[in-house]
Each structure stands twice: as C-alpha cells, then as structure tokens.
Length: 232
Image (cartoon, rainbow, N blue to C red):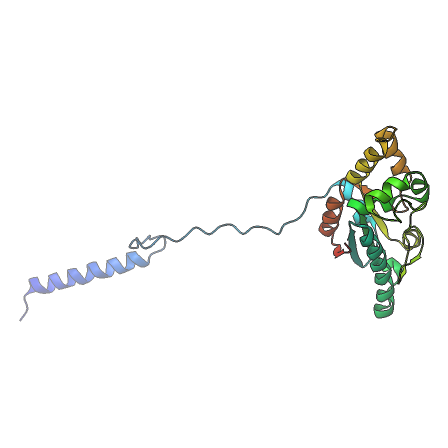
C-alpha cells in the first residue's frame, strides 16, 4: 500500500506538469527555440528598368502609329537599303494587315557617312564634291549635283526617295556630330565652320530631327518602343 506521502508527491508532480503545459499554450508566451543555421538574407527584388525621358527625344513619342520602327543607316549603300525598307514596311503592312500609312511610325536614321544624304539638292549643288568624297559616291572626278536620294530612284529595284517617304510620314533622324564634321571639312577650303553648319541645318530634308549623334538617336528610339532594322 502506497503511503500518503507518495501519493502527495505524485499529485504534486502532476500538478506541476499541468501548470507547465497551460503556461506554454497561454497567449503571449514566448518559447525559446534551439539555435539553428542562420537563413541567408533575401535581397530586395529590383524593379523593372525604365529609361529616363529627355525633352530632346520627345518627338519620338509624338509620331502616331500602331507599330514603330527605326531604320539605321551609316553608309551610302545603307541609305538606299533604308529607304527601300521603309517603302516595304508601308507596302507589306498594307497588303498583309490592311494597315494604312498613318498606322506606322517609321524613323530613318542618317548617321556617319550616310549623313551627307540628309541635305537637299541646293547643298549638293554647292558642296557635292565634299559630300561625294566623304561618302564615296559618284564617278571618279565627278560629284552629283543633286542629292541622289531626294526623289524616287531605280537602282535595280524601285527605291522610294526621301521626299515621297516624308510625305507618307517617315521621320529622319540626322547625326548632328557628323554634320559638324562635314561643316568643318567644307570650311577647310575657305569659310567659317559655324556658318556652313547653320546653312546645312537650314537645308535639311523634310521631317528631319537633329540628334546629338546618330548612335544616340537610334538607341533612344529603341527605348521609346521602336523596333530596330539595320540597313548598313
């Protein structure tokens, strides 16, 4: 027979255990867990890149259109290709999708050696020799007296000219850096580079926009949602 003392000890132990359970499950009770391996800090997720906007590029967003394309040209052959591509975009989007000219926003970038074709016939009549030498166009010893890409041309393929494309809404980005270079090249034979530069700017092709550099204009256009076509 167990003694009263043993029974009291057992009841006492059971009571202490019950009190411990009640305390552990009570609201606000903080349990201390055994230390475990530290978790690696989670790096904050980076947000989607959004390019900065500049007032100098606002014209890129002003053009209407359901589809945007920038065509980059840096050489004399590249200009012919760029104009051909622009014409093809109008034709194929009309025949394949029923889209009109106003549904397309097209920019042709004239940079590097292609920049000489960004000026009208008056400038070619006056500075065509320098332009031809820089762009390597025309017969040896003879320079075109007019911009060969102003009007429609036929060079094995029907290539639309700058003026007809401008009437359909095509915009032209012109490299300002190259324009300054050409003005300085012309001024070497006599004249003031700033005066020549201002003359070239005043005689640019229709729908033209001078950009800090052609490479800047082409990359900015892509930041504004224009798909890139490289014409050479």
